Image (cartoon, rainbow, N blue to C red):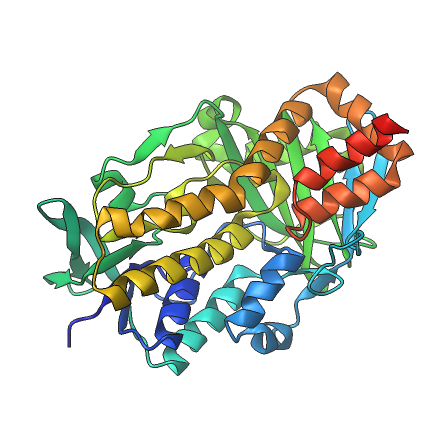
Length: 401
């Protein structure tokens, strides 16, 4: 039986979309070029609202069984050493799904989602690489693939959902991907030996760089360093040398890492930001990083993937059940994406403007140090359970006093 939907990519966006479609009784085929579990450079942060989506997917019990670290909040160190401590907590009418965010290695998260796919009886094919899309007239009707043996095959379906990540073949083949002026690279590794890095994420801002420490297990911390792409590119053959030298040049981070031991090789990903235009063709949706990516400062990547999957699955199911996967029928997905993520995107851009300028970063830190309520509100927005416009209302309320 021919699948009703082909999902390309089995990371959080693709797996979540496929799970939601399968739960509605639709026949789904999932393809991924990797063999699971596979390593993946990631901040490994699940916001409080991401936990809600995991519960909806029926995997939260399994996630809890994988021993994630519960993060109560974030510690932020400004360039001048000002330390801010924000917590995930109820803010008026807005409450986190649970009282914390979670930190979990991607190997574990991806395995949990893959197990859920298999439990639902989804046709999940690993080590199948998608090389192109199949188009007829004004719509996508399938994909060209190559399996691990080198055999090529054309697979067809009324709907193709691209969840194949930053280097999405489908977005590229459809001419949707565009460069972005924000040119940054992320470098990551795991470290051990950090005292008191157990239940709080840590951010160190030192323009033009910033670093994030995220505890993902007993004596195991995800260390990410984000730098200008132009600074890192000449060191592509010696990334570990560049990484260790650069980390020592962030003084507050360097002091934090004095007793740390690196556990794994340094991985790199960049350029981080890119734009993706919605496809003009029918028969296709872009989900997760395939739909665009900005910067990981707020750690929203996995939540965006999971929430985007909810939006995509709702529109896709309606289109498939109605027998109409035209561009017009699928346009509701992009409208919902803009409504859901638009305000957060504006906030993230404003935060980028702050963290790129030392004086502005210090000034903002001093202001937030005097307003811990606003800091917690901001953390709630970053944690995806407080709407970004609440920050404007808080500012307006202060001015009216």
